[in-house]
Length: 441
Image 1 (cartoon, helix red, strand yellow):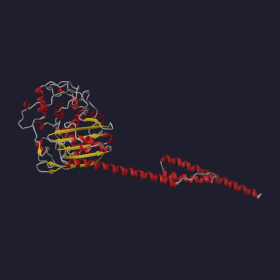
Image 2 (cartoon, helix red, strand yellow; image 1 turned 180 degrees about the vertical axis):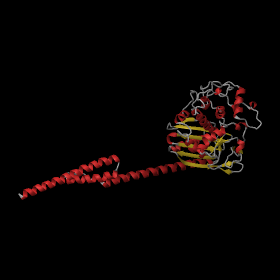
Image 3 (tube, rainbow, N blue to C red; image 1 turned 60 degrees about the vertical axis):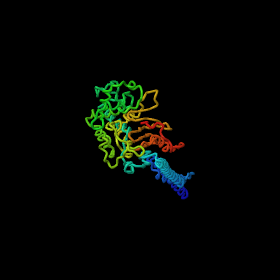
């Protein structure tokens, strides 16, 4: 009788232990499920280990979790992360070294005088200056040296006009004659001016007979009046062809003044330069910046290039800036800063539909594709000893800015070739590349 009672108690005791272990097993797996959903990895490791112990107490064959394997996996992940970070640093250092080698070589052979800034993935990877700011005083350049942007100024003018279009103060397809009734080219629109598809004459090529000035410089209004007085026939119907023409942007700057009631230099300062912190950038009459401590002087050989009467016209040129300020401008050409996304998309879309021309031009910006068919948004400049390049690629947040105060033929070609370095693509004779289109603004 006593044996039967003892056996009964043992069976009951085992049943209780079995039931407790079952509850532990179920409880741990419920805990595992909840913790997995919450991403509590460490708790998962502990709970899984406890659950396997319950397996054994139930007399089943459990699989013990290998902590050493998990730690090994985590260690490899961290090692790979560190290796990738090191590779990125090494890659950036090599690109910096390659870019520096090219420009030091060009400078040592007296083929480059200016400043360079290169950025990728939103980070500046190279910035330097080579040569002199003033050939007479032999003053050295630095990365805060101020350059005449020449036709790169058109990108700033284009943004100013697009801001007014966003504010519904102008219409992209408005006729220019709506604002200047005496303008003889009645079918030309603001879009035609922005995309160089107007066909109107170039005010610079009209000749001095159309200009009378007591100051030695003409104004934007003088340029417009000369076009009205000359009344030459257009080169083609508006929109039919592409022909790069400074008149287009001289008129656009005048249009900004008419709509806003402010001078063009003041409008750009208030709505572009000041908000972006471009403290070393401005649009000014050349005589008013003569004494600036950080200004440069355009020269050819060892001779300074003198201004002429056309230096009083803004919009097509006349903006001054530094490589650092122009990088701020590049950063602001992403949506929601200076312009809305839809406006930028429109500006960076080709508006040239001329089967005879391979040129692509948006609204204030030239367009091309690199060797990987990625869009490059850019503009070049050339004026009175200055040669400038402002090239940007949105696909990897990269930007190349080269400002030279000497007519160095390498500027445009190097602006293109530097993207090859950013892509770790090194074609032969990169250092020797020079532009096949020296006046491709």
